[in-house]
Amino acid sequence: MYVRPAVAADAVRVAQVVRSAAIEGYAGLFPPGSAPPPIEQFVAGWQERIADPTCRVIVAVADDDVCGVAALARDDGVPSGRLLERLYVEPGTWTGGAGSALHDAAVRAALLDGADGLHLWVLEGNARARGMYERRGWRVVPGRTATPEGADAVELLYELGLPAPTLFTGRTAEISIARAADAGEILTLQRAAFLRDAQIYDDPFMASLTQPLDEIRSIIAADDWLVLVARLGFRVVGSVRAHLVDGVADIGRLMSAPDAEGRGIGRALMSALETMAAPLVGRFRLHTGVRSHDTIDFYERLGYALVADPTVPPDAVTMTKTA
Image (cartoon, rainbow, N blue to C red; front, side, top):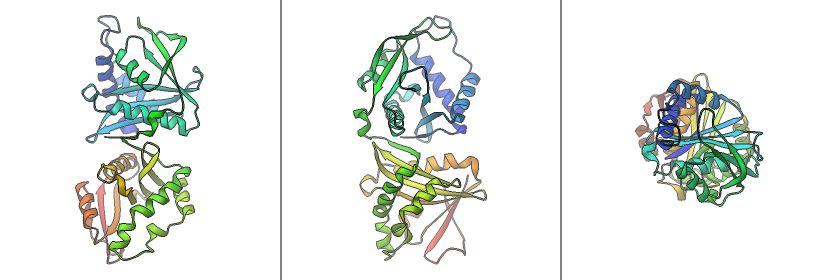
């Protein structure tokens, strides 16, 4: 399982997750006979949130399926100005850690944005959710309550001071779009991750080891590049990038920290990259070394196929996949 930013194509699945979780989690909290809103209403609401540049929506993905969602929004109605809202997980996966992963990723995002606190609303009778938040340091704001429209229920306002200790544990990979501040960590990671390739090809001056920091910063800032990082806690342990041009995503520099291999970070990064780039391109393309047999096998398991390409050097191969 991993978490990543939501994209427009996630709206329908997110709506299904939220509706299922609300029906199960709010059982007994609303008047008998009250019907949940139709799924179309959920879809429209999530389409708006995902498209809203002031709202950060993240999803949890397990077995290539979205199983949870959370939103971090600006809200002048709470003291911190930031609200963690609509954290929902598919009932069948409630004990799988998706809720904790979404919570920690959202709080970490607020902290990286410079927030010193965060707020959320919880139904007073939702003991399961209140217990989860209180175990993570959230506390009720005295005297602040609200009543959801059309409901005979009370919501309590909770607050969390930042930083929160749980942010440093990092058990689930969190995929996010790289920021300028990540460039140094990406460079350090890149040099460690590609040492093995330098040994395989007997080339200590290969581009992945000698790329300057300013070039990585420029790529992160460029509109036609998509650069993702994977974090465990606050540490960057993986990255991948793609140049989006002429309907093709040219993928490169897929890497993970040597001590974090075997945790599915590379697969999570590729899945997130493909999901986020698919609406913009028709094909994915990548190059790797002809002697990198494990790497070629990895990409073939992801659906990439070797194609003839006379433009690459003799010691390289090209692989493609339809978006």
